[in-house]
Length: 141
Image 1 (cartoon, rainbow, N blue to C red):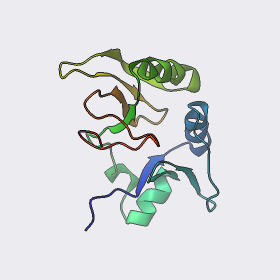
Image 2 (spheres, rainbow, N blue to C red):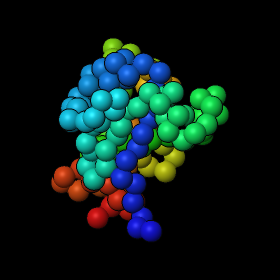
Image 3 (cartoon, helix red, strand yellow):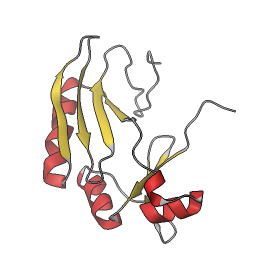
Image 4 (cartoon, rainbow, N blue to C red):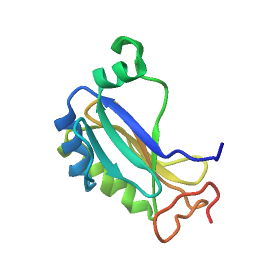
């Protein structure tokens, strides 16, 4: 198995609200089949899928999906980009959980939740600079 994540699927209760949130952050939808809203990322895709549809697809009760202790990471090239992105969260319908601040390991980050409660970390890591195309790799390229 290659070390790769190709698709991140978020189960959501309100597809329109979830899509509007990510669009307000500046993401653009790509064509996708009915029932799925997709945003192509650098080397992956983020998919929004109804929570009940996801449970049906897995073959479990919707209550069994829960929320795991997981965050999605979004790294940026410059420290000030963390502040800029977090400033867009509340007007878009999300919630800032931890304002941007310096981190003990030398970076700068903050956390937010999208309207469905999925938690994102926005981070500037001077030890893992992004490639010019925005791709991230632990310890940089």
